[in-house]
Length: 384
Image (cartoon, rainbow, N blue to C red; front, top):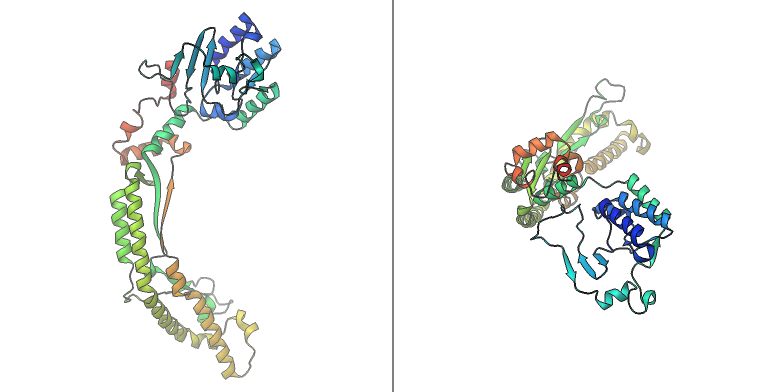
């Protein structure tokens, strides 16, 4: 019994069927595609066993979720932990055991396997059989979504165990840079004018002499970035996992500072927006009165100049107010954004990334390329 088997084991089991007969060999496996993606066995081995079982008129038993190994041969009983190749390479070192030999099969295990005094009456493991169609379905699933090469998968795990990408941004905090977009027709230009399509104007949300400034937040972000993040040129910033907990704590403190900043500036920002709106409306109103935007014509009901001017002023005020937005909304949207991303298979096949990462992380070789147990394809083939 095991999650899966390799081809070499399948050959021996097939030989046993030939040698001692189907009544004396019972094979229990987890017949599931995920088993092979994890590296608990080889689909070719399962196919070999299924072919021989069909030839002999028997079936492989299926036990969903089994992750232990059990071998019973005559009086020998071995319990072992199969090694998923996705996690680590098979160890052949004697001081790294993964199995124990028992003098006799424990009664409870014998009972569960149908080897007790009452035979299959008490059996509750391996009762389900795996017909040819079930095995063909697994093989088809693996064709559609094959297992990743295990040396690559382990490399990804080693990479991700050491560092990961991080996107660290201040969102909507740069008030001094914010601009209010203004449509061309607010400057008295009609669609037929040559300058209409090329004019893209905007108005600073707050003046350059404003006392509202996000500089402290910007400086703090830079300080955190310089302290924790490593830039891989052309690919972004990464953080060592050993620094991640400390980094996360700093971000929590930083977010509290952002909240404090929000509370401090909301009233001031509201006052500045109000004043700047008045200034802008006063500057635009004469031109808009002379040539109102065509899109406003459906809202203007008066022909009397005085009443018409009032409507135009109201429409301008509404449009400028919408363009500025509210101080509360602007303040509420302020935040620090952190997004973590792992290393991908594509990046590991990108030599430019490997070179850039090696340059940015001088210790990278010691924890990746020379990591024990992570073998190249060439090394894997040499060891077979």
